[in-house]
View 1 (cartoon, rainbow, N blue to C red):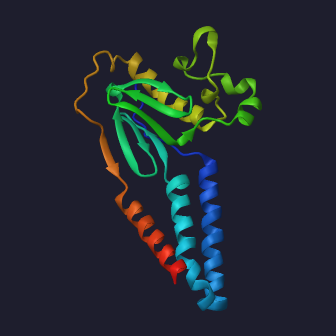
View 2 (cartoon, one colour):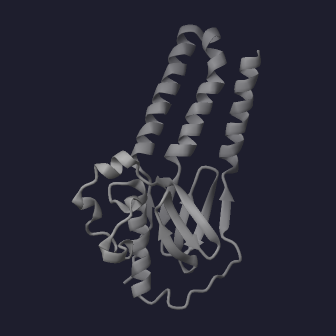
View 3 (cartoon, rainbow, N blue to C red):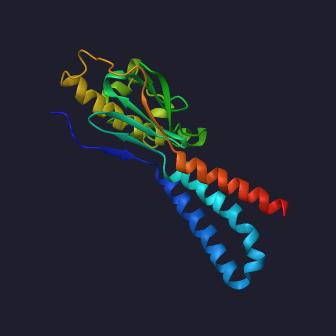
Length: 204
């Protein structure tokens, strides 16, 4: 039976970083405005720009796996990739879905650093979805269970294998010529406005 759950993957590191930056930035502004508003005001736009960028780059990005397909929520846009279009899952540089539409990478699931690969353990390559393993049971560094790319890939592959075993992908049909894309217009507009305000502040 194919799961009907929607699974959202976001790496913990990104969320922690976003919270820390927001707390330090907004807390610092609040303290500064109370202590000396005139001195602090020129720093408001630049600090808000940093907080907004970190939120857009590290808090919001995610990989969402649902019965309909995989949704890659990146910094500037969200791409919806239905299951029948997905041909292969790769993790060389980041979780990348090779599809009938082309290749799409997930900002939320980068491949591990060399240090992380070196520190990997046997548990990192055990109990992964069957389609993870290559010839001789080999596993790519990006598939390690302790890495962001590996964790996201395992979720995608597990659901893909469920659909395959249920026969849902036996006769894949692509209904659209292009994937559905949603641009993050409000996020981009806010960042542009804050950049302009920061530049104006420096110029003054």
